[in-house]
Length: 159
Image 1 (cartoon, rainbow, N blue to C red):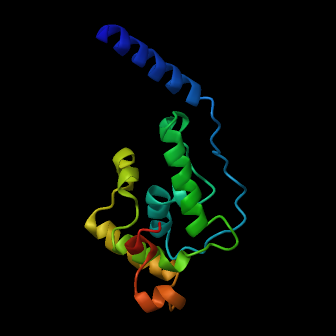
Image 2: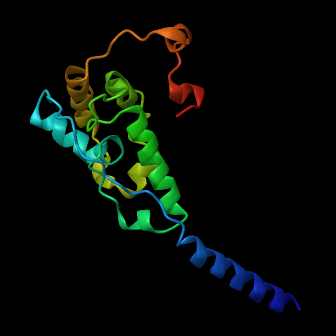
Image 3: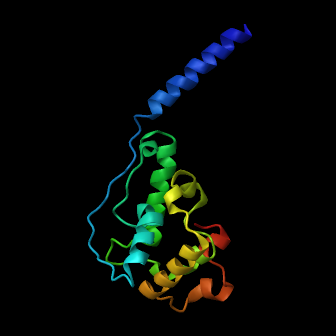
């Protein structure tokens, strides 16, 4: 009896996995309507290596972004990343926070680094990258509640 229940459970799980593969996920790359004036070719190269998949409309969708349920997480990361900071959009969003996000270790996301070893920056690269981001996207005075609390969205758990 237990073997029969396990077999039925396995079949149901396998069928559910197959069925969810047909749930569409948005993997669009909208047109690029902005060109960034990078401080250096090195900053641009490091950005494309470590950030562009989620913070531009030039996402390279890896093979696992086509396998549900992982595809849901990847698409959500890209959607959220573009919402906060997108170099391809005319309004780049929170670009002024880019250097700080990298400096505090919030970006790139740890689960992105698992599958993208090329995005891991050495301490020297990270230092140069932060300086380059701060030159390309100068930090500005933060206003409103975030400024008063001194907490970023990551520290509040809102990202």
